[in-house]
Image 1: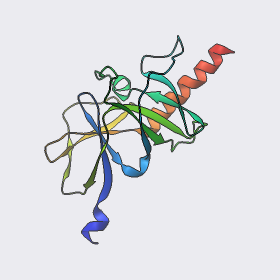
Image 2: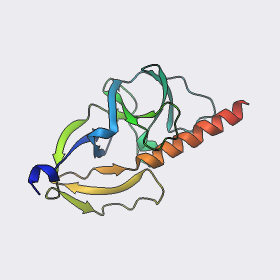
Image 3: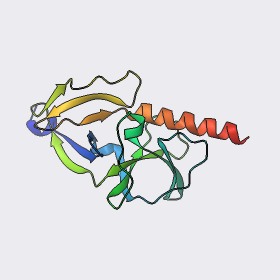
Length: 161
């Protein structure tokens, strides 16, 4: 197998104190952040519904979902729109807040190593942390994030009815 076939185009997504790494195909678009109206009873990690391409896309703070310290949204804050692969969200997408634009990187087995810097809870939004040269990005569990958003939206509908 050639080296080109072993490489994966990925995105390094900047957060406040960490970075996420994920396949480029997971991301639909990156858009500018603007404060969104929030329901009074929403969990702290939920940041509202973003109008995007004729849809209302739920937006979350990955850092708050993972128990990390988020930055206050500001001029560098963006929303990365993800394809919802679990089929749970009617709009087919969800967004996560970031601190800037994702960086495109090519990764292969030679530059990726497992890193056990921190234990992450099972069924949480982090699959694991890896070592990539001199960085330690997190691999997010996008299906868990989608499920948490779906459950929160379902609970919100029940409260309103």
